Amino acid sequence: MQSAERRATLADVAAAAGVSVASVSIVMRGAPGVGSATRERVLEVAGRLGYQPDSRARLLRSGRSRLLGVVFDVRHPFHHDLLTGLYDAAERSGYQLTLSAVTPRRGERTAVGDLLQDRCEALVLFGGQLRASELASIAARLPVIAMMRGARRRDVDVVHSDDALGSQQAVDHLVALGHRRIAHVDGGTLAGSAERRTGYQEAMRRHGLGEHARIVPGGAGEEDGARAAERLLADPPTAVTVFNDLSATGLLDVLRRNGLDVPGDVSVVGYDDTSLSRLAHIDLTTIAQDVDAMATAAVDRAVARIEQTTPGPAP
Image 1 (cartoon, one colour):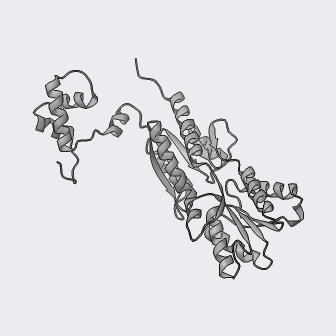
Image 2 (cartoon, rainbow, N blue to C red; image 1 turned 180 degrees about the vertical axis):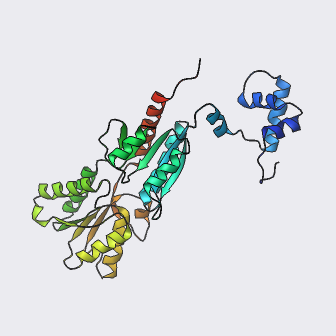
Image 3 (cartoon, rainbow, N blue to C red; image 1 turned 135 degrees about the vertical axis):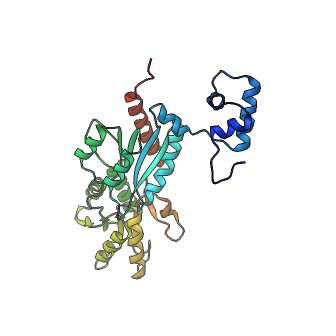
């Protein structure tokens, strides 16, 4: 077995099997051209040395990478959950993912720029703040799948849940529990925020509770939910719908530290159904998004775009 410090090469296998590098290459590609005894010997030596064909290099030589670039935000638990679904969907389609993260000190444009240098065949963007003109510029180079945001462009595929409906379902649930004074912690300018805000407002009006509608500025992070809770403390509602689960955890913390029981005094409904929401000490009621369906749709659209634009083999 080769040392973990160095990966076995075609040359290593050829030397150990007593054949040419060309013969080893033929065997590894499953092509005709060597005898059965040679083929068996090469495969036995390759297994013993732990040789793994460099599929990435082979694809690049063919002009393909079969890589889907994904831009995600490390701060959002739902992005982590969605990545799991994307890996599964990509594997089923014969593609691999390469990731580029958005962090507090690394913006989306930098994350996208790095992937454009990695020979990705398509980009999958989680949410994000890129303008439509910027998406169009990227889409002119390779297929773009925008997730959890809108993009009214024929050259950009969009995958997202019905955010307005999800927000309406949160209000319907709370009204069914007897609540009337229901507030909504907003997501500001973030993708999906306008739709969730609209859904909340429409549901409140439908239930005849328009006069009780109350929208509090918020955002995507725990600190945003905490600030929203501080605003609510002066006149607490009996229930709150929150832009996402992470913001809801910040709101829960402030409410509880100020002596309010959840759900005894205030009921809280988050959005996304992240793994975070299911932790025992949080146990948050939340609106679920279908991770597997969204991931499958994103990969299917990316592959469809790629296969339409990828040239066939040269004659």
